Length: 454
Image (tube, rainbow, N blue to C red; front, top):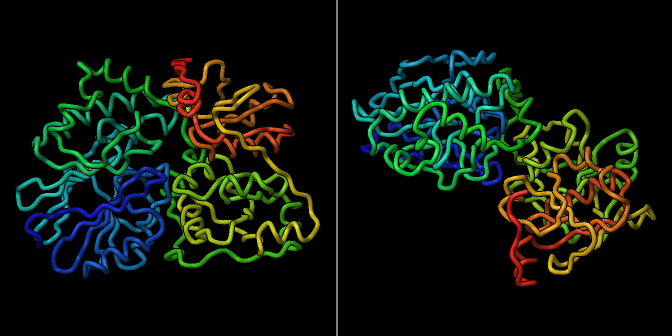
């Protein structure tokens, strides 16, 4: 048994989440809140000479497909809340239940709020608290949002979270390390956190939500900081409750599809995702393509904008990582990955098929209607005066607000703006321009101050 168990963090920068691997001694390990692809966990365990014996779930996740069932297929025992109604084999735990890990003990703490069935896990070395895996309860500088179950339950869950924090978590020792699942970049965090780990004492001193003087003030502060979240969250809890299919580590890329195979798929309703960098998309793309550049945040926007029930066809540049895209897509529940266009855009153009283009402009040179498609909190923190604001995910429903010309779409850099431009093109808007850069670039070029608020 390690004298001082130090969890190894496996961070998904795109979804803003951390999973953990704990050396239990004797060549065994505990995984906490693993994502769907078991490959990174198996590789990390092998690197340290470990076998994953347990996989613990703090809650039914809304933002990713759980990997516990994958690890269970390789011998791990799944630990999860008995109140979660999970339909695949697991050991159901309730408040105060303990799991003997041969020297270490894992104690379940009922901490409802983020979800009704939420558990935090206190790792004990003998009788000494060694680590708290807080899942979606206490985060670094924040707490997890409570509006992912149903609108009518948001306030009651916020009140439950207040009690969980003050009666169960903040009573633990100040020097106890805290390892949350949700962190910077996670839409489950309200507001978004910064650092990924902390201590109980540090959160007591610096977490603004913990500074609320009473339950009512906490609820008001928490609910006032909630923004929009990806629509795929609404289906992910049920996927995790039933148990995702077991398909093993992601190692293979996508099937190669000829132009003649792609065309009938598109005619039959498949969604074409162009994952190339925005400069490539601007230079020439297939009509009706949805631009989502492959990057750490790819899964979030795929899950927000693409139909999970239909086939997906992809376009790449030659040097892009297809395996990473498959991993990200499967991680948010996309199974129908039909393949990629063999030969990419050169093959399409060689076949004499239609190609569309998008103009790019430096943020400093924007003109006409400036459409800022960032999240509301980003827009309110600072935007170009006079800019029109519609969040990217709401853009298709708002397309009638805009004329058919003179639209320049902007975000912080350009990737989301290009996604927005592709959505506008799919809705029939023509001549849309994409800004490279964000409001800060515009302000610096013109020596002007950004507008805040609405």
